[in-house]
Length: 260
Image (tube, rainbow, N blue to C red; front, side, top):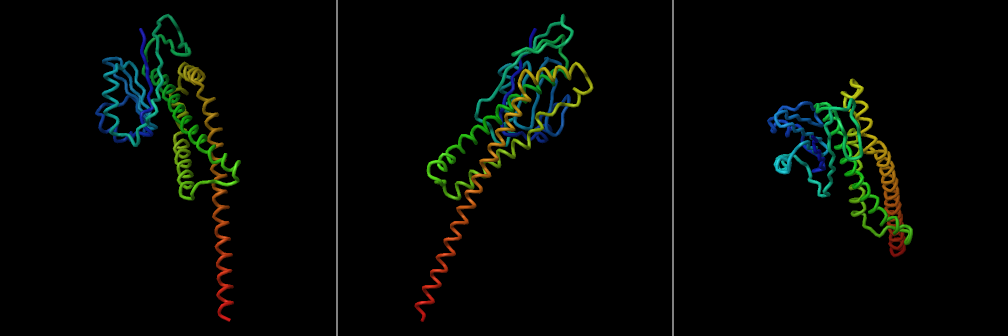
């Protein structure tokens, strides 16, 4: 027997509070940032994270489609990147401890707490994919302006457009920083050695910590570029102000001479 899992980055974020009130199903566990559901009648599980990720376990295509259509009412902005990840769980009563492999994990039996840990890690992996895409786009777009500085010694962009770009960078950067808690481990892993080991093995399998460090490095590049563009903007505006002062002084001298 096996259970198929799919994680989807559907939106930038969900309104968890409003969704929870309207969904009319009691969550197995949850908080203001995430909700985990266990449906014992059909052995299905559902995990919803406020950073826009949904994780399905043992859902068919119809069930997933129906839920996606429902939760779209609680999104801030849909993500059109087709970001998803699949994984599976094999049930093998002969094993004593969970065995994590590249594309599946073997467990002796299905337990809600174990399902939560597995689904959490897959959700984190998809979220990191999303943030990696965002930072890649920012770095790629900044290269255009850096090349302009290299070849022309100046930025061929208006103040308004440059400020818009800086605003976009800050918005994405703040969004990522606000959601970096996604790497936090749930409290239940600290109380259970088996779940703690499973969590660590899954993190290693999905390269969660390595990818986080890489994301942090990319964010630093974005921040450095932002500082550079801000300095260039300040220099350019300062230069304009200096020329304006020179022109005003020149005009004042001309007026003074003509009045003699």
